[in-house]
Length: 173
Image: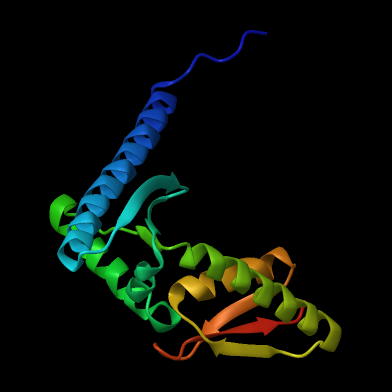
């Protein structure tokens, strides 16, 4: 039996995927230019790396320890810079951006810590059978914890209002 011929919808899906990657790369370029301008204004040295991971552009700034000031306490300055960068991308493209900004490897290190916190909370709930609420977190932090809990085979949900929104881990049904 012969393999089915590719259909027009297959070609369209492949073209849409290519366009999406190109759009994300374009977002990364716009964001990198914006961040580079901010670094120049603030007189900070840093190298900018761009990547596409899944359905979002990733822009990372690496360099000296002076970049720690751009992270702030608990990543608050980084969150603000990410929102400003997303607005700059939106202003240029007209589309909402899900771009992720990292400075000095903060988000990557935080992701590892949060994954461990999620796994430990899941283990605790598995042992106790009790619901476990966690500390308030940012949307990025909650997403990482939800993923770690799901990977452990449990269910979680977010409760509360920003900025005090938190993850609640539920035992297996």
